[in-house]
Length: 191
Image (cartoon, rainbow, N blue to C red; front, side):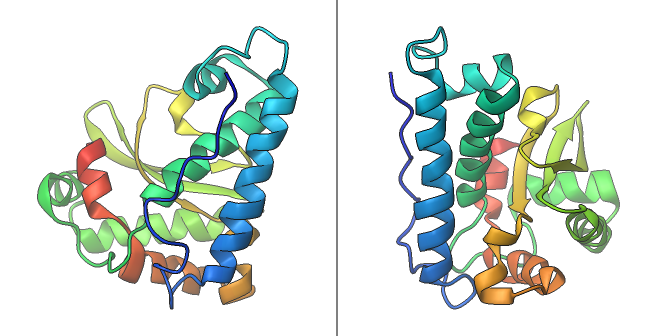
C-alpha cells in the first residue's frame, strides 16, 4: 500500500495574499511530495509497506521516520490553515486556551516565542497533554504525535514554509499565521 500525497483542503491560491500560490506549489507540490516519494521508496518491499502512515511514524526511526513524520506533519499543517482564518479562537478551544494560559494574549506570546526561537528547521505546536493545553516546539521531523500529547494545531517554521513570501522575516510569517490563517475549527475538532 503506497502512501499518497493527501489533497489540500483548499485551492492552491486560497491562502493568498498571505501565503502565495507559488509557496504552496513549492511547499506542497515539491517538498511535501518529495517526502511522500522518498517514504514510498524507503518502505517498498519492507514490513512497513502495508502499514498506515500513522503506524510507520510511531514505529520507525532514521530516514523512514524522518520522511513519514514529515508527511504527517505537513498534512496536519495544511489543515491548521484556512482561508479567512486567524484572529481570536472560538468554541471550546477558546475556553481551553483561557484555562491553560490565562488569556489568548498569553497563549499568543508563548506560541510566537516557541515558533520564533525554534532554532533552524522545525515546528511549534499547540497540544493537549494531561488535560491541559501546552505549547511545544520540535526540531526537524520530530512530532508530538509520537508522544502522549495530542496535537491540536501546528505552524511549520522550516524556511521553505515562508521564504518565498516573507524572506527571512519568520516573525512576520508567524504573526500572519495567527492573524489571518490559523484554523480554529480544526483546533476545535482536534480538542
